[in-house]
Amino acid sequence: MKLAREDYYLSSYLPEYNILEKGSSSLNYKHSIEARAKIRAYALKRDKKTIVYSTEFLSKQKSSSKLGRINPMYGKKWTEERRKKFAKPVYVYDSKTFDLLDYFTETVIAIKELKIGYYTLRRCLKTKESYKGKLFSNLPLLDKDKNI
Image 1 (tube, rainbow, N blue to C red):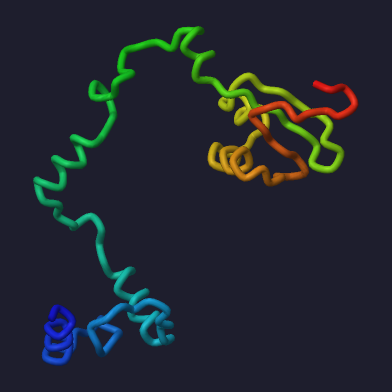
Image 2: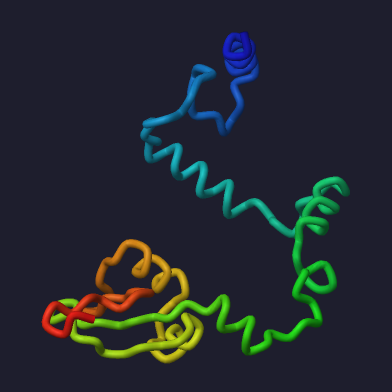
């Protein structure tokens, strides 16, 4: 029913920026060069400063924000005990020889020392993929010779 109504409006009004003739999903649709040029021209012409947001939208954005006094950690200091509870160690190994290169008590320290992005380190820890010849782990790797 909704698609039929959408088809009706598309055929009646022929909107300038509509690419499809039918009201259906545009999944796997490849835009033509002309369509891409139109989209690019529209994006350049649009002024984002003139967008007017509803008060309902703005209040939802403000209430969902955890900045300032709304943040549960506002005004609290991280004690050493709390830091140890939440901190995760980072072990850095050579990706070919699996030799331990470095050890960090916290991910924040590892990020600063290795000059690596937070999300990159998180991905490497999760997927166990190497990055610049290094493997990262939250747990020490077992050494067969030393039986650790």
